[in-house]
Image (tube, rainbow, N blue to C red; front, top):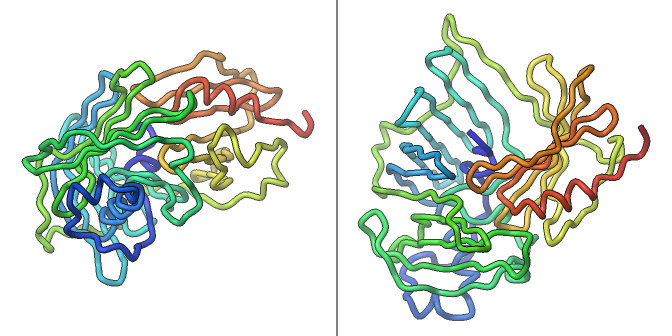
Length: 327
């Protein structure tokens, strides 16, 4: 399900803003970015439940989302598919499980990086300055999921990222819908609530699963990698995308995959590098699914894949930036 970890489960730090009662005039002021930052934090601080629709290219998926926030900062979340094969994702803070009932399988890992609906930013701690690469404009108010919403257009200042449109609830400041557009105005992806409640039933608060008899568990071990130990190097900044982390991912006794993550604050992309099996190669042909684009290439004994919700030109720049120490 594409980059659900990077797109649907994220983390943030609470700000000191007064999060309730902003008016349209406040949103129209120079503090618009600060208000959107507060919107991002509301996704973490509020409890809510609802049904949402994700549309990416020709793919459409309806899901149920429940989010419970505790005064101590703990979060419990459930994302359950309502169409197709049953599956659900449960998150407790940074621990995520994917439960596949038909296979009696539980996949789990600890998330390392984040931008997720209904959160906005990948790191709301001052690391990024999105106004350097995006221009912000307010559009006409609209209704989303039966609620009045302010609409903001985030226009990229270059060709290396897409345009965002954010629909923000006037009462709670929670993001109700997010849209991603190409440079020619084509809608690439949208995710948003069709119904939402801010009083979820506490009895439905999810908890992490334990393997039952007949079930299997597969953990992906994710650890921080030392870039100095890798056979290649990547720059800290690529066209306004800053390196946010380098990780090693290992599932069971399988082959390890290195992942380098970049973000401009809103958009996120990753570079995956792994040892190629004998005779294994990847065609250097880009693949797209809605807003998600990937491109792979074989370099010596390694497979390199760049993937993200960014224009193809950005991935090409990323692949060109890989410098091999030796082969």
